Image (tube, rainbow, N blue to C red; front, side, top):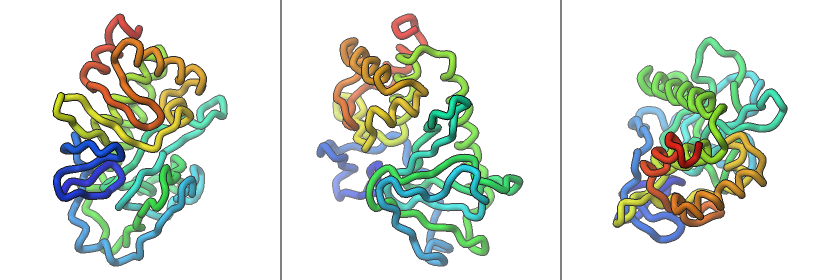
Length: 234
């Protein structure tokens, strides 16, 4: 069975909230959990509940077992900036042994998000933590790369990345992305005002690059990336 973006499984391929089936594009990095997953009880987060806050003392590494969490930092202007979405199989929290405080806020995006604090005696191997640190560095690098791009290009790149991580390939080769993302979430991911993000998303639909709205989208990630790097959106 193939997990969907929130960790649910179906008997005949992954099924998103709209009923489409297909394989996830980039399966989460599921290191075998058996040796340590039962060492600490799982924690279930309600929608909007914070797992930890930026600046708090970094005391734990967490594995996401089901659901999605937003990862947010504060921009120099004080506006919240989402640097990524964590899903099933991801590790987050005190990944860097040299950091004594959390570098971002992790907050449940949907209802019943399940995480587990890892027992340091039976936690994942160094390769898993190194991979999670690499993901963290990649998210920050992508945010920096996006800063000087027009909002349309930033939004296209953001949707393509989300589609490659959480989307499901359909029979016609496009990707169906079903996530509980509002326009406010998308705005925080691209670093723009909500009104600007809404207008830009409408423009992407008008250009035929994106279908759908309000957390249910369909697009070709490669076409979005090409547009983001070409004259169409720059």
